[in-house]
Image (cartoon, rainbow, N blue to C red; front, side, top):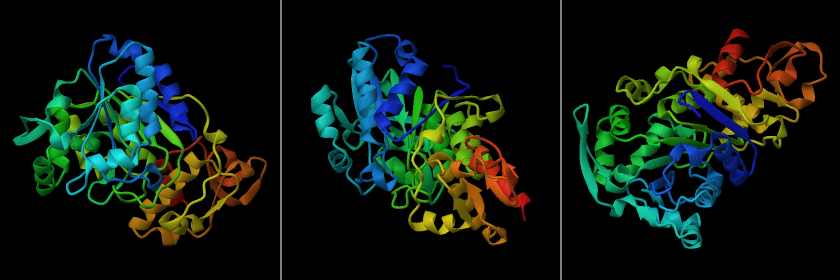
Length: 364
């Protein structure tokens, strides 16, 4: 696996999906030294389980630990810090991490209790977890989801859990974007495995999940977030910290240079059944056996259009799903390769939300 690769797998079993990614990238060869210290950094921003779209599925962590131990790596830790005002230990508890720790003899490290090292980048001085800075190989396990202040959060922002609470507060006073970029210049992940199974549509703390049944892996955190932004219907300019991190030399976010490798097809997924805010957006769709990945991208695209008051211009429902494979109807429009027989169709399996937005705007 090289820095321009994006590995993607679809499914509903996080442990199986994670294993497929690890074997395809040959993680053991990537790390090399069996004596290397390895830190797993999930997203446990609040003490809730993954169903709400806020936190990393713990079976992803289990799959990585099992793989590493099978390949002779035994210096593994799970490192995280909840947001200010919430308990990391409670987040560990509600997600079953104490049992994982006992079963695999892997310590849980609450960054709130860790020692910190002061680092300065771009004029910003921050207190960073000593454990994170001293680890040999850092595996970042973010959830791809919306965020009320930065529009989205994925690899780059998930590193904020490596800070002291004092530095987290300071980051917010500085507007988040510039300090997030600076933090990743101090320490960015050696590998990112993104939990994109059901990230929240709008908020970091979850509550309105959108099922996409997808995981992807990257070496480059900037490339990872550029790709994640496109899946959620954002242009790179909508997420300023991506470009700022690239300018600092953290990575390269040009998706034209990326090699996107799909390990399987999303047609294996169960149909998506949106609720809440996603349910409101789904009224503009006409789904027939739609795959979660494709439908989830459409929901994100409709959300972006709604934000700029252009959803009202969508005069007909957008068809989507495998039920349209044999349909030839010039009066209908659709997204996804299954709708190629309709009057107007956006191909792709699945097309990204950013491409769906452009397609839908052209229908107006």
